[in-house]
Image: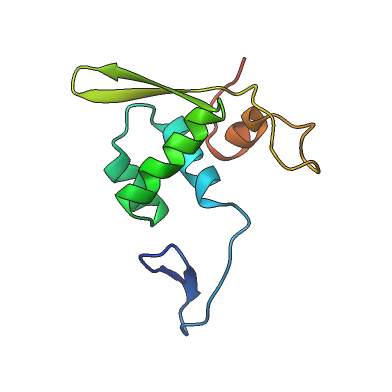
Length: 109
């Protein structure tokens, strides 16, 4: 059993600190890929971060070209760019669409 703390640091049932393979940026991107009209408040809750942190991550992802935001009424709708490449040189030959397909199960062109 894993218990999530407000800082998104997973802990085991005995309270020991854990770690994860995916960053908060990846978790936010996946949450948006699963539900493009989701509220950032809901993304933050799902990821286990603050709403302000989710806003900063979305801004990072937009600035890097991984996301586009469009205002639809009172909400935002996000479009993920599945052609974006991973930033680390070790994974730069892979597209983020592969990550989304693996974890979010959404089809990519």
